[in-house]
Each structure stands twice: as structure tokens, then as C-alpha cells.
Image (cartoon, rainbow, N blue to C red; front, side, top):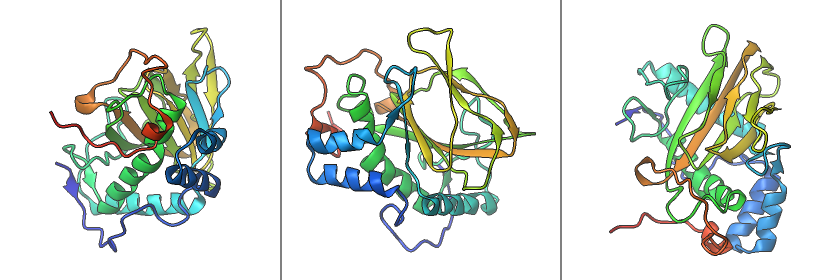
Length: 264
């Protein structure tokens, strides 16, 4: 299992105050209180579909500056602990695995609470809302959270690939003023594979996309970019490919429900 770090935390059990952009937090909380299409549409309106993605990639302002500062503070505790950590995946050498069930991960209770709450309250229902033909019961039950870092002399780019997920959220953790050059994300046009579309991150900005969407990170030219990435997939790493028909898709109340693991 992961390496546990003594964080001397106060035992908080939710997202830090003022962590999520207030417009999104208000809309999401309203939809949890009353899950209906009208409230869900307000949440949807805060996510901008990226031109050329054919409904496969959306962006929004997710984190406040306070939220970024808090996450960075907790990540610094991991870095300063001196405990060896495993690289996030075969393509990213610099970053931290936050899943406490994975060997070589860095287990910090505050971060574990944070990402579980973020997934349960935001990422999972929003992924179901944006990609209803891809996510049914259990298809997004498991997660794999990790950070990535691009910097000259370390990882400078990421080759084109697909994620092992039904949906991915990619959140920039740079603070305002921590500028960098290059390192845009590009994704392959869903209709014309010869086309590439660039997306540039800003502090606290989140991208949500289907895991199957081919994408890459262009070379960084100056500075440093740090992001939090979370993959969602089914039990045992299952990634559903076949689309659901309209009749099979989750209802709005099912999308906004805390699904429990089914026992057979």
C-alpha cells in the first residue's frame, strides 16, 4: 500500500472552504439538493465545449486561488517528507500517485479526503452529465489520482495517447503569476484525425474529456506546469467502449447519486 505521511491534520472531512469556484459550487450544490434537468443545465452551462472536440472535451474554472494554495501546501508536505514515491505512469516520471491503495503512492489523509470528495461531489456526476452515452452504473466507480509536472530538464512533453479511463479530469495547479511557456494540451479532432486543437491551461482551470480522446502535451519552453489528473473507470480497471442507447442512459437522479459498489 501507499506510504503514509503524518500530516498532523485537524480531521476535516470535506473540501477546504472556498476551494471551488463559487459559481460552480453553487450550481452543483443546488443540483445535489434537487437533481432535475433545469438545475443540471445550469451546471452544464458553466462547462465550455472546446471547438473541434465534437462534445468530447470541456473546460471550466474549477479551483479558486485559495484552493490551489491549499493543494500545493499539502503536496509540499509529501515532497518534504523524503519518502520515496513511484512515478505516476509509464509516460510521466515526475509527479505523485495519490491513491492510497497503490504501492509507491504517497498517502496523506487530507489529500485522500480531498480527491474523494472532489470526485464524489463534482467529477463523477459531471462526467455522467457531459458523456451520458459512455457512463452507466459502475463504469466510473474506481479512480486513479496523480500529479504531473513539466519542466526543462525533467519531463518536457507527453506523447499522443489515450487514457485508461472512461472520463479524465485534468486540473492546473499553477498559481497566478507562475507563468510558463509552451506546454499546451492538444487533442485530435474527432471528425478529421489530421487536425489538432490546442488548449492552454490557466490557474485553477479544469479540462474534462473522454478517456478515449487522443491527446498530448506540447513541449514546455520555460517555467513549470503542475497538474492534478484523475482517471475514472470501472471495477478492476474496466473501461467501457460501447455506447449506451438513449433508453439505457442514466437518468438525472441517477447521475446525481452516490453509487455504492454492487456485491454479487
